[in-house]
Length: 83
Image 1: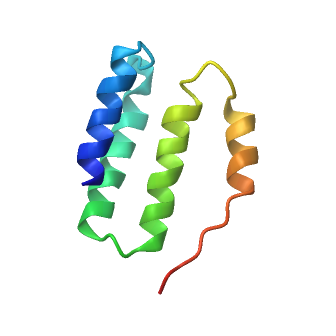
Image 2: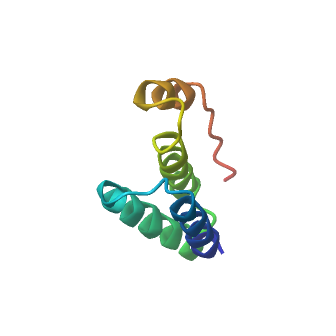
Image 3: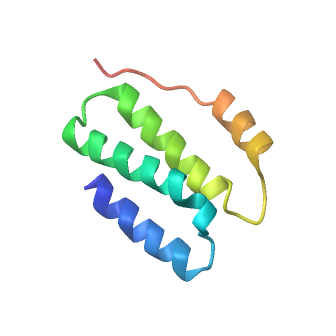
């Protein structure tokens, strides 16, 4: 489910010209993390890692923001373990 949604997101970003060869490692990380979440959806730590991947993918490939903005947003994010 997460992997399918990620693949759709990647297609959309590519269609918008927002993905480049330099993004290959980040894309691989996002795919691996999406697969891990799909395999173990109850692990909050994996969900958090996947969310961080998505923020990087969107935030660092947009017209605004950058690493500083990403880190500021991440620092204000509270994750709760449902277990």
